[in-house]
Image (cartoon, rainbow, N blue to C red; front, side, top):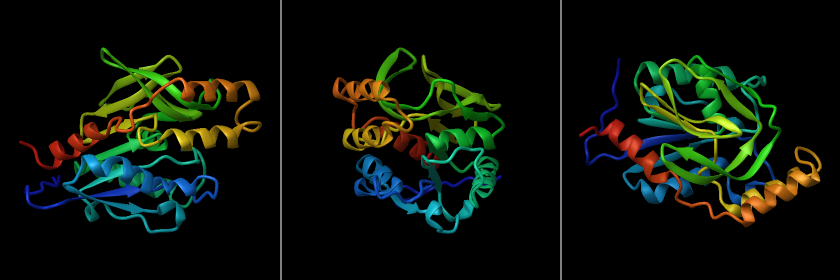
Length: 241
């Protein structure tokens, strides 16, 4: 069993595993990896954050190539056939076994649950996009959502840490260095608004689109949502006091 412990004067090297395919409608906001880096970097100056664009053909790194990993969202489901799906699951198992910290977002949340012994699949709630209220302990907070699939079976050793009426398993903490969230703390309103427009008539009915647009118009989502928590997760794991 290996532990990645970093001296205080050495940067922490964190890989952002980008599993979202290039998309001309969204790439003007940046790739999924670039968006995550923009969100997290101001709160994590100790780290070197590197996008590894696996969905665009870049080779998946090995567990030992980085001190920690972030798994992005994706347009894919955990049940879809891709060249990288099973290798990512195997990487996650190695990260678990070697105690290398990993954080997952949306699809990252789902594929982590699958790799660690749970399950994810399409929910009967339909496609959800917009600002949604979640509960974490006594705290309620809004976050941007963009998904249909959800985690249904909780993996062994995992604890639900955030929930919502439409999504009971909105965040998970594990009994090894792993955390994940179903929502997108890295997303900002312009991207979500563009997604609503793009998905209307396909993934969203006209009425669902109105509800989604109202949700982001009426709700201010913190642009720093979860950023400090994620930075602290990696710092405490890699540089325990």
